[in-house]
Length: 210
Image: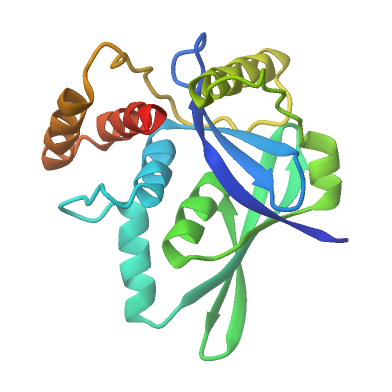
């Protein structure tokens, strides 16, 4: 089976279902997207790894795993989303130590959070992308409107109950009335207080305005 490389397009959130975030993966040499619904903790961990400006004062769980692996010279070579059963994605982490390769089973959200920290490529099989991949059709307007289209697609997927990995919950945010300066101040406070869920939401709002 042929592998298709994926990149992270971004993290969206449901406008109608409280507690639902979606990680949107994009095929590198194509237009199809692979949406995976994840929980708040996983969403914030991935968002922090994507946003280099957020520096947690203490390591998150995935950061701790990275530190542990570095100490024992374990390297993550790649992540493969290898199976889709009843709407749940299954992933494998391909690791290497002393030229010995090991394959470790993992939730897709955890695997991707680690792949980001190791700069490891993310793949899936063409058969999975053929089954669960979608085309997000935008209305040729501003990027902010594209983000809204993403969330609408997420809601449609949740209603259909197809091709999603549902994990823990998350809360929606309401920072659209704040200025950029206020958002940055709130972001600094959230990081200092180790409120990474809030920090991830603030980062998303700041990113939309850039």
